[in-house]
Image (cartoon, rainbow, N blue to C red; front, side):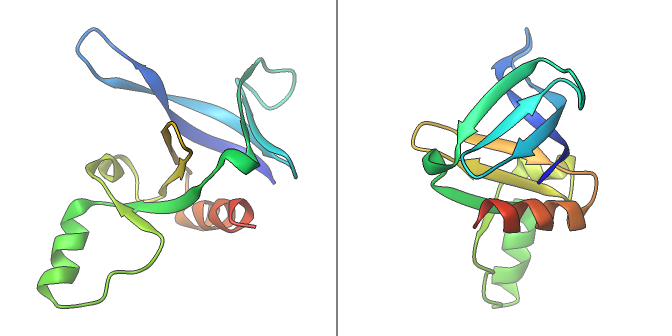
Length: 119
């Protein structure tokens, strides 16, 4: 699978904010690799599939509070974090050493990535 996603960077700005960069992602049997552009772009990172512990959709914390208030069961494989305010199509990859936040243009694209990464 391959396509564009926006990834939260690891560094911080002068004001302590994380930067978000649009990257082209390519998933194969061994790794998720991301580039600055679709064709001929510089490789910016690579994450081995075996290092991915968990793949989760990310929803706003307020949604969790609403579900709890309504006494509705929380869906599995969802992380609740206010970073989701940036996009309803947010997801994250957890490794032993870090959590990588990404979002797609649509929730349908996010669901495709979730399915492909969970295999």
